[in-house]
Image 1 (cartoon, rainbow, N blue to C red):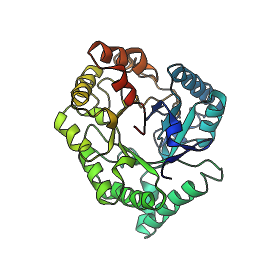
Image 2 (image 1 turned 90 degrees about the vertical axis):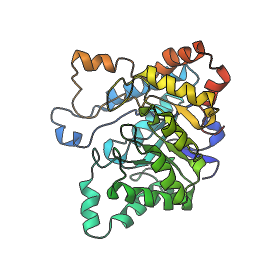
Image 3 (image 1 turned 135 degrees about the horizontal axis):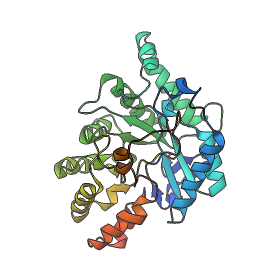
Image 4 (image 1 turned 120 degrees about the vertical axis):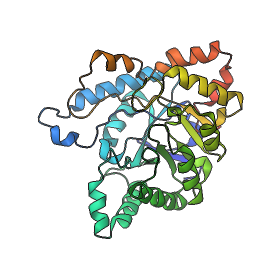
Length: 320
């Protein structure tokens, strides 16, 4: 791919991505949602409406592209993403790949691994989707999604890392990752680079789950990009408060890492399965978890602390 990237409406030069949110989900469901369709059926009109509303909202802040790295087993829906893109003009990049072992749909490939075909099957899946399209469509992923567990990359997860690296070397496709509860960022980066992935084509996700500055430096020194991409989630899924994220981010910006950091929310606009029921405490923790929170609250805070417009701008561009 080189300087090109696939969107759900076709291939574009990376420079044409413009201002980008690197990690948002227009649709998402934890594996198992498909077994609850009696009380939680998929409503295509509601999903399209929610996605269109979110896309139009970020568009007002100059966003031109949204990367949606929803894993294959978590409800990835490229045709819905194409509808949202065509309705709003927002460019959307979708993914191919799987979630981490603890919350992914592991049984399928573990069974195939017992038959000795899993690695071949995963390689064929990646290559078919990248070269021909997803599920009989002409929609192709622009990234591979990888994920690891808290404090380890399990053998199951490493199987995907190994194959993704091989596919990257053959196609040039970029890789975006999920790190669990602020762990394994440096390990993911080093593993992928050792496997032959270009550092500039790697985005290590959810790095704002860790406020240890040495952890951040360890990862950034490998040359990869990182996502400070969970703004708005307060003390859930191991995430720190936004205030702690901002303090860590400012330290990194003072050290000149702005060209390697990208901002986002990891927001979910439509949940597959039954609507979520939250108690008051949980609802309070996610009240700011929506796709314009960064522009309404985080950027003004950064500016008030002396971070320039130019530095902030750098954190919304994949190629800088």
